[in-house]
Image 1 (cartoon, one colour):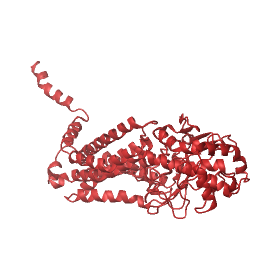
Image 2 (cartoon, helix red, strand yellow):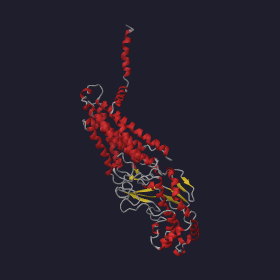
Image 3 (cartoon, one colour):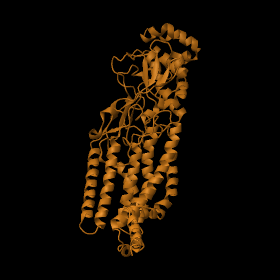
Image 4 (spheres, helix red, strand yellow):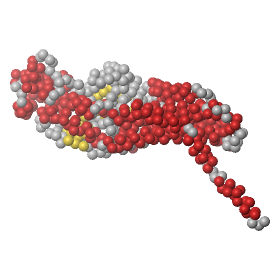
Length: 546
């Protein structure tokens, strides 16, 4: 008897040791992962991501800010319908298979069983998203010349998938039916995509939408988060909203499926209320947003003043006759930009008024009426001693369609060459026919056949459908009606009014300009070295120009 008693107690002790907290939930999760609808939709999502997001993202310049923003918006749009549909389909499973009465008799609470099914769907969705993220960020890491990954957009997209999965699953549980999944999936896509139509200006409650990464209708802007740190204000508000929405939906689902009036119902109600408060607070914070001078959305309650300090970096330079220096993020453009500017640099290097250095700087952003955003060159502080330094913006810093390297270099030359020549020829007070002739001749000699840029690039981008001259295409990146076109001179600029320097076609000044352009470059340069002070003072006539 003394030996038989311990032997009889061994199975019971072993049974108690197997009942570890969470062990059965883990086994149930593994079972749900093997029989989840989201697993079979991942190939469809991968193809959709490649067609609509990956190709567009890889066509952009290899800059972390551009690709992170494109990944956030694109991944959310690509995943929403499959994720919501799969979650809703899993939520209707018990009703579709008519097993509701059968599973109601098991020992596990209904709400915990449903949460495990939802968790399995969410895990597959996040696995697919992380795979897409790894490909995009892996390629960008090899291509980018400067900077590092931005993780706030990554977190927003991941949290959006969790929230969408919860919404779809709750809809499936509450409205079981075979048509619930497709209806809810399609409806969620249109609600999310059309929510951006309600955004007006930089202050809008709809900025909590996870497809928004910055000022809406501003277009992809490579200059944002390049000269100044990426502002996480909007991302924090979006994470608060999405997390609160997830908690509210799951808490309400647990509250509706919990039996009795014990601690479970109280906890579920508390979670639901906390989620609603967090989501409501995020929406309220989004309504206080404003356009930051550096092109990002700032929320005063979430803003860190340390992010207003510029990023320190060592510029990359090309030692031409007039050195050209760019932000290291634009290093891939430097050879093409230097080649495009070489003709005009060779014409004026060393002349009075010619810049001693050309450097790329950040832009200044200002919210206009509606969704229009004015982008202009940041001027140096007065008395900074940088009069000989010419500050420029590259076209990719002005928002709008992504440009190839050759297109960017050509547009940079067309906007920068007129200003360089205006600095040399003009004096800021009146224009003489001789100045028109020399400026036009030098412009033609530098290979610029038409003036499509300006001394201080400034652009106003606004509602879709209005095309500005030279903007390329309608839609995002187009300017508002009646606003300055690309490259309009800013008031007070040293080269303001340079378009007046263009000799009218058919005039005597135009004929002299053609004659001046036909001279050998060395002859033009020697004449300018001798007569440039008199030309700038307005003391040279057309007859004195060779």
